[in-house]
Length: 135
Image (cartoon, rainbow, N blue to C red; front, side, top):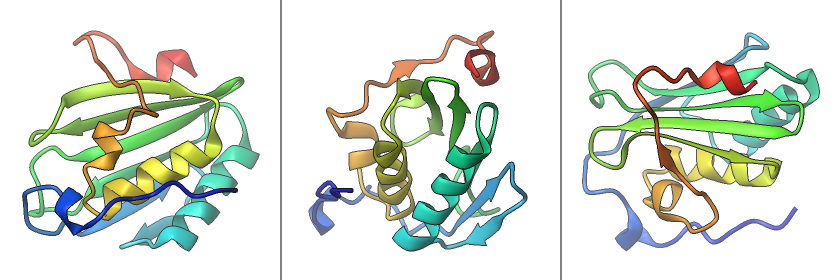
């Protein structure tokens, strides 16, 4: 799989580094994951099939309402994120598993690419919309 450019230090979000925890529906929990950890976690969720998920959270005291999650659908993935410093509460769909991995890498590295990449079409989440309804 080809990896996308994750940018430079100038692309980093304008805030302190955040300590991340990734949890999956397969009961995996990884603190401060690197690209290899994320590739493994996304792969496990993909193999587990429809309805499986992974959730990235900033650990307590690190950021206000900052998280990223992905749920496996029959035909791809639904991504959903909340970032008070960025686009707010948004969601996107993709069939590209490598893109899901890249978005999680960008997010955990504090790169703006997770929210600014033209490869991801984020849309605001309507208040009553639930992310699992598209699973």
